[in-house]
Image (tube, rainbow, N blue to C red; front, side, top):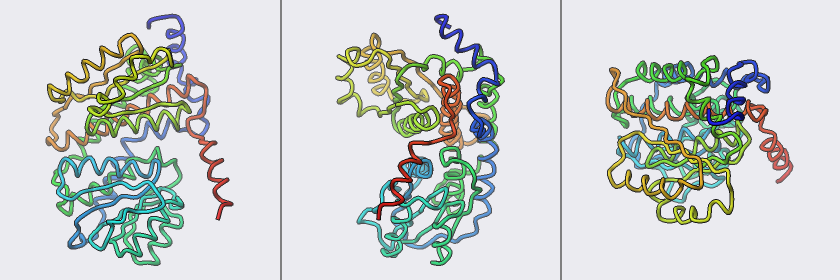
Length: 368
């Protein structure tokens, strides 16, 4: 560690009771059990017995918050391996292009997200092929009454801790239909996630625990998470986990776009904030031009921010090339979960509760 404060923070994280002290609802255990959640989610997907609708020309996933992230990740896979365009909607209203040749996935973990219920009703009016992914609530009731397929997942936990359930059943279903030609690598995925957990778990000391080291370095800083292509989507997931679990501001941006605008902002960054921390997500497969963009950007940030490059290299452990891609996505995502709960422990906040979001929902409940 670089100084006494960081050494003290590391010592705090090395006492597991300190991590659990501010986590009475056990968000920590939900993070630890994520590999098992993914395995269960894959099983749910494999049990889906629904024939694919004909003449589908587009897919829309509509949802909010943690319920929408599965749509973001599905879009990544279709962009890379599929032949049907996928869009993600985070609003009350659906796009005007939705029609009878659109498959709409209405995703709400609770089943009571008001924006998703509104979008569901509009998709029904437009005659779209509607599927629902939920643990219950009004969405399940309406879908059953309307005769739409429902993929039922376990309830009782925050949507942001349910990415496996909100993502993998869709992936497996589309693979079975032949819409995602990825092969079957579920055991490989499980092995990769459990391997990351073995390295990042709460009983692993900070000295050899990268997730804890990252939390120590980020403490007191404003994280900016950068990535290119699919890694930019995962960077946004990191941002959201820091927002909800750690209760801190964080921001994300995408290469190459940020080198056309945000790069200029670094010229006076130190005049605005002296506690910036940049995390760059990479997989080592970036093109030479992209690596040059990242190198120049790094030089511009050198005197203005703490920097950490987080590289998830391709790991061939018996899985297919496409399976390795899914593994890499999920491992890159999973690390953020550990870092966010370790940061929550350092900030002495409960990673489970979302008081401000609940306050907003209460205010909205009386608005007609």
